[in-house]
Amino acid sequence: MRLRILQNAGMLLMAAFASTDCIAQNDWLSLCGQCLSPSVYKKSGIGTANAVAEAKVTLKDAQMWCGSWQPDDKDCARQQLATPEAKSVYRVSANCIAGTITAADEQKYTLAGVWTSDVGKGRVRFRDAKGAAVGQDEASGGLAVAGQWELLCPGVKKATGSPAAAGSSNASPSAVSQFASGDHVEAKYVGAWVHGTIRRVIPAGQAGTQTSYDVVLDNGRRGILPASMIRSVQHPTGSAGTEPESEVESTSKPVMSSMTSPEPDPCGSKQYCYNGQLFTAQVNQLILAQEPRYRTIRMNVVFRNLSNAPIILGYAAKSSTIIDNEGTAFYPVSGNAGDISAVGMGVVSAGKADTSFVLEPGQSRNVTFQLYRRQDKSIFGTSFSWNAKIVQLRVLSNGQQVTTAREFSVNIPDVARLAEI
Image (cartoon, rainbow, N blue to C red; front, side, top):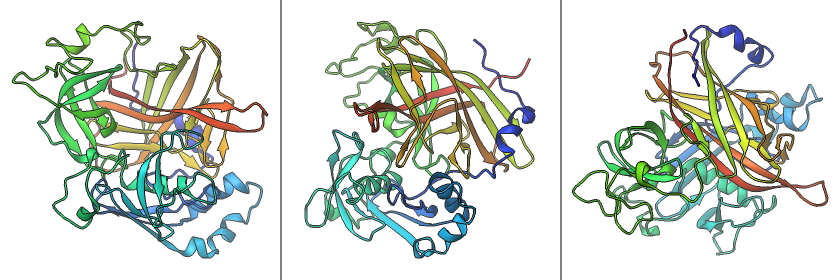
């Protein structure tokens, strides 16, 4: 299989951008299921004891909200911008070490583990100042607070220090920023933890909402990975690339060549393939184009159902990003109707879930993901790493309600850049 990147394929993308004014989806604040989502214009200390973000509603934010909730009201955006909520400046701050956050409602909350069921399953949960659990329902606002925490402390799901460390400038960085260039680590690769070395750290400001790492694995693979796919070597020995004997994957030889598995890897020798156990996702085409104002990427991904039952998948809005090996980030395409970067798969966003993408057992379907960035002087990389959240949906027995069964953090690293022949 060949991965094709075309340097001057602007015409292929013109139709996708002709009817909408595209904006980069960097960060926004989650306030409630049907609230305007203000864009973040200032942030600092992401992942540390002093994480801060400020946001305000822009015209594009109002247009996106109107496209979702009042698509037939031509005066909707102007009316929304005139509301007190749209004129406010929202500020959130967190101590990612101690597990505390002052949310957009100006209330303080404390991290209390993760939700184990319902729509917020797998996401962080909180207690309020009185110690009461903050619910997942719209009125309680637990999921909104979780979204704000994920912006300030991406990947952090438990406190790693005491509240007394809240104002300390000497507090240790959280798990998302604890590694440095030259560190020996273990990285998740095709279902296994593989030894590798960090070549460089890509700060959050260059790579979206979280710090990323350029990692070279002992099996020869290289890619830019999020912190959630990296862990420390708990008991390193004198030989780089060996693992502690207590680990399940432990071996004195290269991990990938000696691991045993009860089931064959469905990705096998396929390049650019993600194995989610329930499905695989494989990049089979990536087109790069230069526009006068934008650089654009159009990527074709094949999803295949590995289970023996039908599954419903959806793309989590605004979750798709591509980061090249120079630290240049590409973001989803959005317009008045919200995130339109996934063509062929339904979008899952606040209060809405499109269940149209159904895979029968063994069935494969193609989805096109479109990402872009404004033209600047940044250097084009030679490899690309794609991250996105794919959600498994479940329609309840009444046929009227949809719930999230599981979320998958899809990561396909090190997609090589090849010349057109």
